[in-house]
Amino acid sequence: MYIVAIAWLYVVVMMALTESSIVAGLATFLFYGLAPVALLVWLMGTPQRRRTRKAREAREAAAADSARQPDQ
Image (cartoon, rainbow, N blue to C red; front, side, top):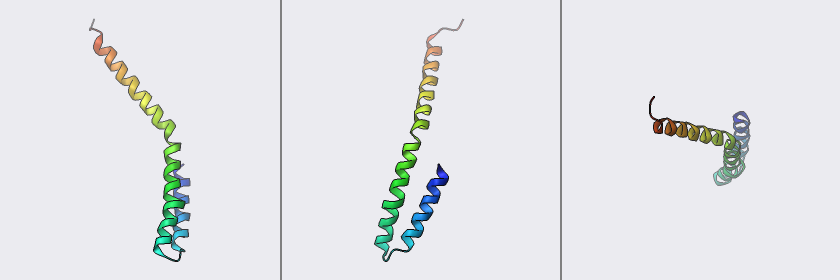
């Protein structure tokens, strides 16, 4: 996934460099490059964030259960 994002940012930087003014180049970079890539990375990372959160909650629940049970 990251290779696609890097490649797209490279293409957008090349597009931005060909713009007639700095403002147009920055707008091209922000609206064609940075914003869509940030959205893509955020959306594609959602399943991993969900798995990480569930694993952390499971570890916390296991730790709480072991703390409640007396040693035998």
